[in-house]
Amino acid sequence: MQLDRRVILLSVALYLALSIPVSLLHETGHVYICTANGYPYRVWVDFTGGHMLCFGNLEDNFVYNAMGGLFGLAGSTALIIAYFAKKHYALLAVGLAYAVDQGAKILLEGLYSSIYNSGAIDLYITALQVASWLGFMLYFAKKSYAARPVNI
Image (tube, rainbow, N blue to C red; front, side, top):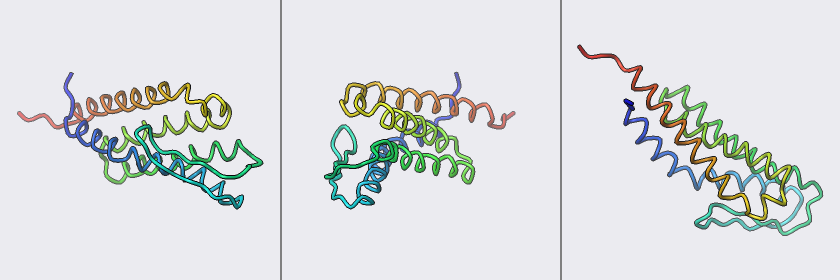
């Protein structure tokens, strides 16, 4: 299988470089709802990612829980839009992978918040994100290589 190394290298660099910013963007969605209700909050990052704690009793937990994923999805969408400006498949691969992750988090945090908050499915969410990233990266690296002009 022939792959475009430029797509792979930039995809790896983008994926790693954007992991903390996308995580913090996700947490910013929760911060938005927390502060809109007048409560203080705390945000931090550790080896498992970004975290946010709202020091208040929110009335609409669904909106609070889903808003993190919506903010993260907006950031993922920005990467996908950037692909159309730059036409580099690495942007699309990373943007789509983060979109899959944030979409899953919208559903899981919004509808199954007790399971999500327990941490019992963290490994599965991470596996979904990494598998989708690898899948998109390899698919677009192959597609980019196939689209190269042939030198005779």
